[in-house]
Image 1 (cartoon, helix red, strand yellow):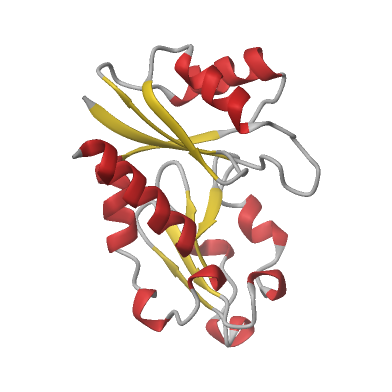
Image 2 (cartoon, rainbow, N blue to C red; image 1 turned 180 degrees about the vertical axis):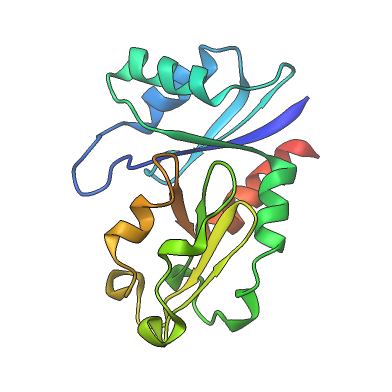
Length: 176
């Protein structure tokens, strides 16, 4: 049995892509996945499966069942743990709600990244499959332009460290 974490992009943000979590859980369960649970209202799903889970199948099933199409970043519990543990900014963060991990499909490309001087006091570091960001002045005051996030691809989706830690705890509990 493998434990997965599915991160849906842009769910219930500013009134867009409204999706009740009960409908999301039902859609995921309809694919035969078990122990399905959600966290918050922003499209975070933890589940287990004996067969390999598929992000495209999840996207399609969720869209068919709910009428809401959202990109899905799919990670195993082990992958989520690795991304969280590789966070080079964790020791700099004093408020986990002001730090994010942007999960991406494939390798990250730092070419659209502004310089450290342009970002200060914000910090951005590229990992193998994630972009780590610390916003001491708050995420809403980030100096990163929207084009930066667009350059990460249509599957990229961010979660603050508090949410990542809760998802990891949920996944590890299910994996125990």
